[in-house]
Image (cartoon, rainbow, N blue to C red):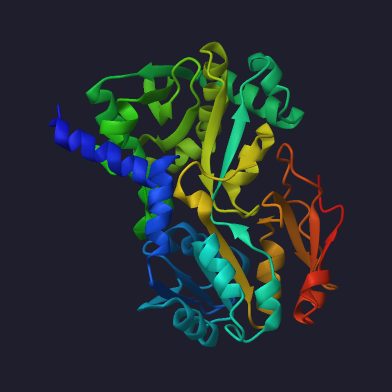
Length: 398
């Protein structure tokens, strides 16, 4: 058992990074006091170059994803990153604009308003009037109507595939509570899975924080096959009447075979089934970057959750993507990665870039509950510096 001071410190740190209310307001206030920010460049042999400007470590929420999507679209060897160091915000953006095809700035909404209002900060005037994205989004799934009703929200093909896999593998859902259970999950499942997926960019809760906060005030589950634990999920909350937030996931030893069997998807289906049987009102399916091209987003949207700003300090952060150079590579990247942007009223909507040569990626559907009509972003108009009229309503997928 950890000393009370250590356990209390871990709970404070968790609240500082993830909690609502006062911790979120204090963290946002600390962000506003940061007069300098990090500047990181990312270049590859193929595809556009990126510059990320943001608060310390914030690039790890965005830049690795952008690099992954660039590699998927254009191929080529691993990217080369260059950390330029810390700069005042305006100097950082000017330096980034001279160094990259696209700049992504991550900061608080108040600072973003000030930066966008600074004349001549970026060389292209359309960048100051382009879309603003939430820095992170959470996918919220109300638990209502019972397990069978919730499963019917998913497409028929998806339901049939899961039912077939469940019959083939005989997966079972196993709640667990012990310290040894946690150690097995964290060491044999979570860490190997994160390292296999993210490598040096792995980000997660520390083992101590996960134990002192999530295990004490949450739920640990395993998916078993013939008695062997092959996947696990560590959640926050989940007591009757309390929301359940999915936090850490893993498959045994991070082995690719477990992805091929579909057990990762089974974690979500079986978790929904358990929540229905245990009076859990809401499942927070956890946070994500605001891009529809992210694979896990495309899977989770099949449950038709609603999108919401995070409960913690990230709710007050925004992501400002500025496409500074009109090249075929920049256009191809934008079209391949439709996103969720915030309107003037603060509500998110799906935005699909396109141009005369590249149709909107309607196959990357939004499908979230409560979203307004999808919007189309005409890149020909955007790069002609007519940004205010460039985003128009249109049927960009249902």
